[in-house]
Figure 1: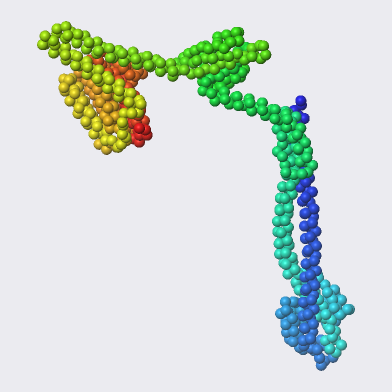
Figure 2: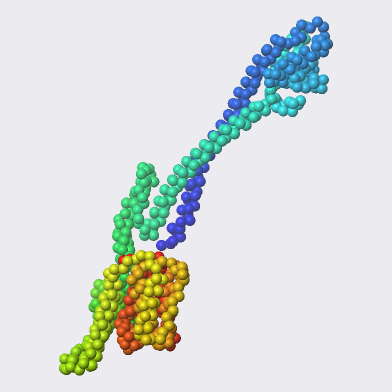
Length: 615
């Protein structure tokens, strides 16, 4: 099927085109309505303002004409009379100006006789002003125009009146239109603010409905595209009862059965993959040509290629270090389940129990599946149990044989020989003490491993324990008549250590005993304590025979001795360093050794100052 036919680009263009068409359909009538409303409102407000201005000026003119100061002039020439009493006219127009208007008195010839804002002498003839002409013709005139004198838009009202002696005059009142402009500006700002708010509100609503509609159409198209590509998941039902909802329901009913089948198959496949991936056992599936179809991470770790891409690779290419190809060959050839055991030799030897089973497709074998079960720990425990049994048997057999031999000698008549009898009895006693020490160490080690040796964690003064252990060790050296120098160094402000005091004493005594045992006469033993990086570091260094690199890897094992003969001569059981290791680990610490043959050895114990050991 042509993928271009179902490209999402046309859907995006269709959605954008429909979306903007709907937005324009919603917003354009609203914008036109607001514009017409603004023009109409401005026209209405201007008319109302002009009507109110004319009414105000009509009322003021009526009152002013009643108080005209020269209503009965004595002279025939009103102009002369008015000139004689110009101060009265000025007061009269000033009185009218107090009402907020500009007042101008104009003669029938157009001459300005008085003005509330300007000097009449400097003003031009006003006979041609439209409102003045209309007033002399009809008795009253109105106009809204620009003023050449005030240089601003004004609204004018002129009233013709008889000043006496058949002299006609015109009283013109005017108001500036800037007040209307200011009012209109304030009103229009408010109106446009409200219109903008309404536009934003309605625009948001139209955008919301347009987007909602276009999104519904887009979802329908995407659904049809998914169906064309084999994805039959139904659309989410909509709580709407329109044509689009009916179309969606129809498409859902068309796809629901196929979608259910695909969902079931997909879930089953994903569940199987999740189970296989989370298994601790290694699982690998190959086809009839031993090409890897699937393998989990546990299998890749087992063959030494963690995280490797396995698809399309041959089994031998993926598992070069594990000899499992013959097992697959037998299964693919015979069609039977094959079981065996293989060994992987990396940094550490790993043992796996292997089960291989065929995968059948009808009457033919299309592949095979193998499961690797790690049995390395089982094999290690079996070896440890065998070694422990052999070591215990060996450690016990020697003193028991000595005791038995000398006891038989005593029973055969050596008791009558006082000197030999005493010597033989002493040997039996010493061997029984050795058995007792061996039994005590084994019991102590088993209790430590089981966590039942009664340790009590509390603030402990390691310096005091060191002083006591060193003094008792010096006494032991003197009693054994061995020429050794024992030194102790630790800071005076040594912090308290949360630990079990008996365990710390046991660790120090075992390390000192080990140093004495392997350091020849004239040697030196130095015990140091330091604090660094939140740890207390206890070191015991000697100038003894040293330990080889190979022996350093095993000295903490049970019954392991660097020099077995010397250890047995000095009463060692071969369990001291193993006890040290277990006690240090109980305190969440660690122990290591640094040594060279002939250059002595240094044992270091690292104990955290805030131990998190659990009792």
